Each structure stands twice: as C-alpha cells, then as structure tokens.
Image (cartoon, rainbow, N blue to C red; front, side, top):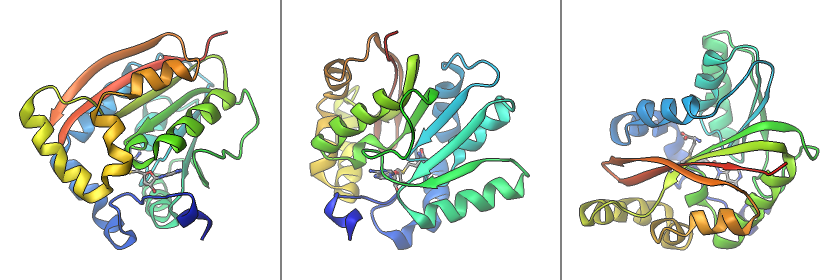
Length: 219
Ligand SMILES: C[S@@+](CC[C@H](N)C(=O)[O-])C[C@H]1O[C@@H](n2cnc3c(N)ncnc32)[C@H](O)[C@@H]1O
C-alpha cells in the first residue's frame, strides 16, 4: 500500500513481467555496452562504498563487483521479486553482494555513506516530485566529492528515436517519462546542487536514446 501511494512502477510495469526483464533488456537496449560504459567512466578506486539504486535484477551490480572486487557494493530496489532474481544471480557466480528493499526517495542509509551511486533506468520510473526527492536523498548519502552515475532515457537524438520511445511511454506511463524525453534531467541535477553535471555520451537503442551522466556532490 505504501508503494502504491508513493507511485511505484516495477521493472516492466507489472510484477508478473519481471521474470522476463533480463531477456527484454539484453535484446533491445544494448545493455552490456551502456552498462560497461557507465562503470568504466566512474573512476572507481579500491575499497570504495558503492550503491546501485533501483538495481532491479542486479546485472549492473554484478558488473561493478566483478570489475572492482575490493569495493563494497549494495543494491537497493523497491521490488521484492526483482531482488529474488538478483540474489539468485549473485549466488550462482558466488559473489558477495548485499541487497536492500527500499525506495529511492527514502534511503535507509546514513549521510555521507557512499563514494559512488549508480542508477540505471530508474529515473524514468519516478514522478517529477520523486525525481527531485531521490536526487536530494542521493546527495545526502554521497560523501563529499562522491559521484552519481546515471543511465536513463533522455532527449531523443533524432525523430526516429522520439517515435521509438513511445513504446516505453506506453509501458511505463507518460507521467514519469515525459521529463526524461523533454531533456529535463540535467537541469534537475543542477537544481539539486550537483556540480559539475557532465553528459558522457548517448546510445541509440530500439526504444529510444539512452543518455549517460556523471554528476558530482561538491566537496
Ligand atoms: C527498468 S528497471 C532497471 C533495473 C536495473 N537498474 C537495470 O538497469 O536493469 C527499474 C527498477 O527500478 C525499481 N524502482 C522503481 N521505482 C523505484 C523507487 N522509487 N525506489 C527503488 N526502486 C525503484 C523497479 O522495481 C525496477 O527494478
């Protein structure tokens, strides 16, 4: 009930579709390419504390731990079913990862806890207000000079990409996705006091243009 009140959208809109999530992503959005790029742009050093926000089935969480085994990586998601899949994937490759169930705009962590926060394909699930609240929470839990690395749907790079993005809007809803496609994310990052706000690169996919950002909590 709390989740419904908070306008919560599961991985593929309906809980029963979550079991197909990994297959859909692998086939449609150049998943390995954009997630590997997101990880490699993050300037991670040994023993850092890392949060994967809205980790879903943990493909990115596992990629982070595999590439940087000495870091502590936590995955947080609001959907129990996604976390069951995440846990099973981690056990299968014998990786020690911690998963928490929770909401991005009310994080169960102390202030200044993480060196890096990652967020892949989460922000288009959030209303404008919850995007703002989530950015405030991430700012709080990041250490000074910590970075938030985001991959999400952004301003389309051409009219074909705009047309393809309608499929995402029909599935996930216009309310949460319109700010993304209007290119509003970077100005929201600035309003939340992140500085600098850097757009790293974009990927055109079968569902529209994915944009990657690196944004920093100033010292
Ligand atoms: C499209 S999936 C992305 C999953 C994963 N990060 C990836 O890139 O494959 C979005 C995920 O965000 C989660 N989610 C949506 N709103 C959330 C919120 N407010 N707090 C935490 N998780 C949320 C959903 O349960 C879902 O697993």
